[in-house]
Image 1 (tube, rainbow, N blue to C red):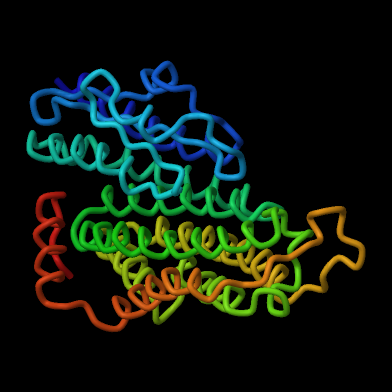
Image 2 (image 1 turned 90 degrees about the vertical axis):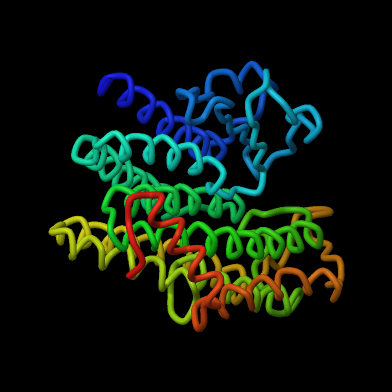
Length: 325
């Protein structure tokens, strides 16, 4: 039984990690052929299985949403939005089965190992990244690592996990909307070709700067609360070295993301931009409303969590083998 559960959990983690890294490295979806290789089928607790179809967000995806709607009866999550929450759902379900079977001590070290490896990969590839959409893709690798890490720590860490999944979905959503505005206006997402956004797209530049602090878990945004909860769980469960290593990776990732965002917001634009790429379409105010609204929600959740939402998060944490802080 332990061997079967270990294989299922390993496949789920591998599917999540490989899907995030594949998209970041430029992998394109190849309809159901690629999908089949990433399916995790578990026992009766999750009969449909799940599959993550991913595309590099800096390329055009040759597969439409309708083509990815269903893969042989499995639940298929087609994500060009770069949010790891859907992929994490499969891991959470398998983990909850393991916890219910009394295999906590067997499963948690596996989760902790995958979480730290994911953070290490994200830190390595974020530093020096030159494409803003690929930067956000590797940021999702980071957040996938934090989710798995918190799940492995248990306790209050499980509460931090569910809050982090919600907060990251909102934060990454408005960041991609803002980057979409940049690509729509400039035709590129290469940092060296879109410098000086504070002059050309001032509202979008402000949103990107806000997003810099939101996605890196800086106060007063919601991701600060979730990451703080996960790190606190590391100390509470007797893993201070995990907290220390995680903080080190988070600092490296913050530096890498800040370097690019500040460059494209405040850097001097290319004096002789190449061809059509040099033409910037004027900013459309109505395209700023949606990302600004999501940014406000992430900020609100960092200051105040409504009681009904707090209760729902606590219930979810209990299902994942933890509790509210």
